[in-house]
Every structure is written in structure tokens, then in C-alpha cells.
Image 1 (tube, one colour):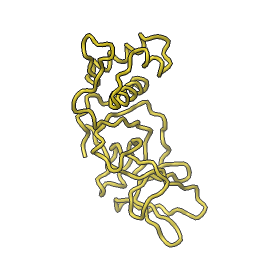
Image 2 (cartoon, one colour):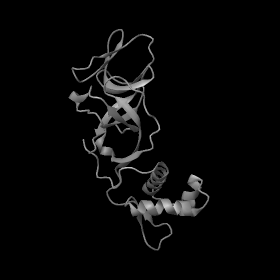
Image 3 (cartoon, one colour):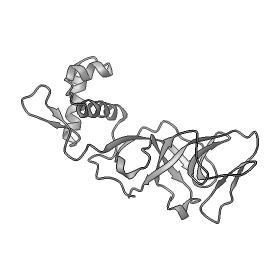
Image 4 (tube, one colour):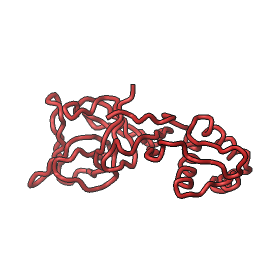
Length: 206
């Protein structure tokens, strides 16, 4: 899969939040005023809201109808864009700790994914290359504690994250790589383990 032709790859976190708020409101048929944007985000004045809105209009992420107080609208072709935070990295190899809290958000076409993801993680390693998941890819993760046998999952084991195929045996779980150079990870009884979510698609940039 490839990235959508989104008009902007990433935004500062506060501006991304303003855009997400405006997209929700406009999609519901409401066009917020600058005062309402300022109130929603606790800005001291409308000037802060105006700065964000003007920047978003300048980037083509919103359109402003001249002469109208509530003249914001969504550009054509953006209805399927989905804001997704990049929360950190996940190992396709030996598990690694996640750098949760990366200040990045991407707007991607929701049709790239099934099911719709809650967030993105950057892949580190090559243990999933036979499934087409490469080092540096951004994988979409649908947050759920449950997964079927054979699904590709993001799992937390001993406090660290990895992406692997889940195999449910009679007595224990195995996390299976998709590269013969890597060994399966056996989940021992009583080991700190949790399924964080299921893989639902990827984005490859550059």
C-alpha cells in the first residue's frame, strides 16, 4: 500500500488537533466561528484560533469562503482522510521499547486500512519481510486485546513491543516471524504478555 495524496504529511500536535476538531464539525454540517475554536481549545483570544485556521487554509487543508464569518469548508476529496498519531516504534525482530509520545500525526486515506487503525507505529527490523512489512514502514494498529490464530499482531512482552504472527498452541502462545533468519518467540506461562492490537495495513514513505 502507498500513502494517500494527502495535502499535508504532518502537522504540529496542536494544529493537528484544531484541524481534527474542524473536520469533525464541518463533516457534521457545522462551521465553527473563531470564538468557538478558541473556546474549544482554551485559547485566550480569537487571534490564536485565527493563526491556526489561516495556516491550515494556506496549506490547502481547509477552504475559506470570502466574506463569510462561518465560511470554512472541507476541500473536495478529503472526506476519506483519517488523522493518525505516530506513537513510537515496534520491532520486527527482537522486541524494543516503544517511544510513546512522538509529536507527529499523519492524515491518511482510511481506505488503505482494514479495519480502521487507531494509531501508527514505525517498524524497526526485518523479521516480517515475507509479509511485505519492511524496516521503516509505518504500520496501522487497531487497538484490541484479542486476536485470532494466524493474525499479525502488535504484542507487548516484558514491557517491550514486537510485531509478529500469532500462533495459539494447546499450552502456550508463539509469536512467529516471517523471515527464516529469525526464531519464533515463545510466550512462557506467567510471562508479562499482552496483545496491544492487530495489524491493519501499512504506509511506506520515500
